[in-house]
Length: 348
Image (cartoon, rainbow, N blue to C red; front, top):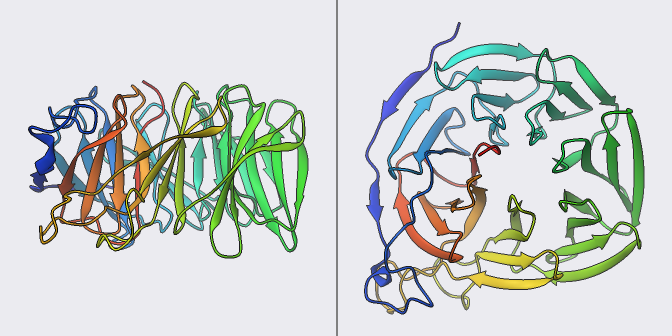
């Protein structure tokens, strides 16, 4: 059994100066809201094998050094007990004891995706494999290279994309009866897909000539319901557990040269519209050393619907109060650098 070196370190917790004595309608004057005791796991481009842990109930951070590495970021099982390191093969570790559960001969270099009920896990690589987590038996296999996948809310279907030449496909896989349906998007480059709670709508991220596009697609009507151009790139899309809001991170200008807000947009899924833009500017005072916008790269929502933790292209993470949909604080670490990843369990 492999063992991991657990490292404790101190991060400089900095609450934004405007959290005190500001307008309640614009900022949260009480600072970051406390969530239940969940752990958000953070990794970055370098070093790949260092996993930082942010504990939502206390705001404390620590880390462990894993003997596995993944450039796409590890994935946590829906119940929070295991972590998958997807590469040409995929390692599984147990998070309480930091020991290796198994090493699987499946390519997860394109990302590992777990089902909300924790019964299935998908490995996206040169081919697609969906396994039963109980015994790691194969539930579904497709020889195509499929990416950007998510399970449906009831875990019965898996949605993914195949960017293929001039035509992209959205693929719906029914794991129960091992069937798939392919919907073409001619002239489009689809990168990722998230199904709505009832699967009547798909949230799609496209790559256009200069900017990525977000589109809401009506499955039954085979039509586009809503389109938005995402400023300076979209790195991550996350749907709230109730399926009401979609969060999109955007890579903006951290030095404040572009007008805020840049980093996070929130969309009303039932209403097919932009609901709010979350301003991640720390200070509005020119000359302030914190006068910039955090360009949030990846985002993880806690399953209790209280917090979102976002990684940036710097050594900071941001804390978003999901009740108010405002940035509540930020935290400087010494282990998160560059394009980084955040992941939390799906089950409450």
